[in-house]
Image (tube, rainbow, N blue to C red; front, top):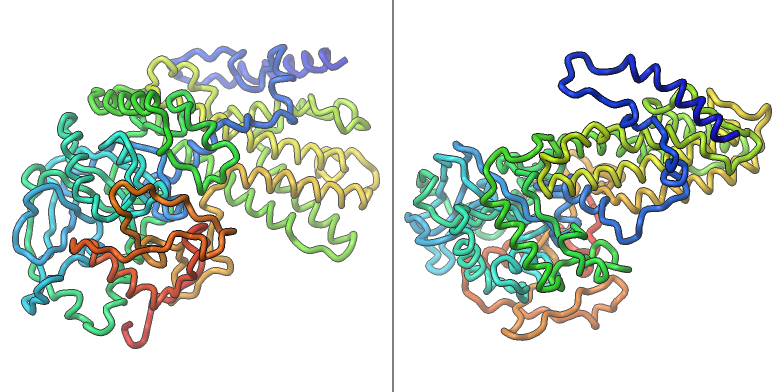
Length: 581
């Protein structure tokens, strides 16, 4: 009976497919490649009860790729897992604050926004009244850069610096500020072999570790009023603008002055490239994922892959726009899943309200699946709620619609692109599995507007359905863990901004002795007395002093709780003060 029904479905769909071959297409699509066509093994392979492998990282690759160069998600999940080649276009302006009218003699730091570099525009040692020097650099050619994702400029011993330290030194550091000068020097020394001009990182805002100020940039000097001279007693309003500038890049498209080549992405979430990290991640929350314990063999493979990427001829890829593809999927589902979750979490007081919310939820599920609801897909046995084989064509079409045409491009894809394809497939599949399963349950409950299987509704059944729906959707949202859902609720007022705990404000300031093992990452359940006691930095590096000053000034405005940096949660903070403080 089932096989006959499936063959009938195939016979119905095939004529439609024949009429939908793209005009002028350079490829001749074979009908058997279309996702709605079922093979003999599809029923088992596309079962709605088949959960993702718990060790799979498709969703992690997907979300970290979607988050590249965005301040908000990389502030939330600080430990980066991606290294991506890119370029800074000709004509882009970069900024550097200092006390001297001279170029940095060696590798140094520049900012993408002047609010960030102005933080360092002062004389920390002589308290000069002659102002400070603010340097503006214009790129005279495309600058070749490497981007470390995450909060990769935060000097912490908990994983933010792991990826760059593994590239520079093949081992992780203690995260102290005093290692910054050696870090930039050794990274630039390594990158010189591949024509790398600099390294992109993020702290309160984005910065670039520029290796040579005499190559690829033209400088203009400006003698500005020192930030401390603006308001010697209350300079915090100037410091706050660093956070404000960083927030401009919170969401997609993020920092657009850096253009990434996703065909060259190297990910520590690639289980084929770095399998030793799989067991280490097992049972961990995503906050605690870090790459420092990677095996020597896997690190060697990572570095070999990155070096091969950096010498790869330009344009050697499939040409697929992976950034747009990932964003299309996020745009398609993020708000709809959020709305559906809101409906399921709404309080109800009576049976009429339950039925009303169930109808609204079913409508949202149907809306998400509308492009995939094949006319021939209807319940085989309306009395058997476990019979879901009829939904397989819908599920498969939904899950593969964005990627099925890419099969013919596999030979031209780089290793990174194959990883991205796998990530998109795995993420789309789980979204479509859960949504299809929820929608089918609504059909059997008799609340679908077009496939009504009941003459009268059973309120107790719908109440149980509500609970099941909520469990399924909450599990999906937790698995996806998209940062687009992390926001201030209720929203902030016009004089406020939504803020995530951002290094260094409210973070422990630590200087660990050479050779001392960094402490274990703190956990929200540990008492304050059990956590490592921070010792004030002793280095007189002016960057260290600037960061300490900023942290102290902004703490008076933001008033961070002692532990809120461990698991960052959004909150509204004021950005306008009558007294300018």
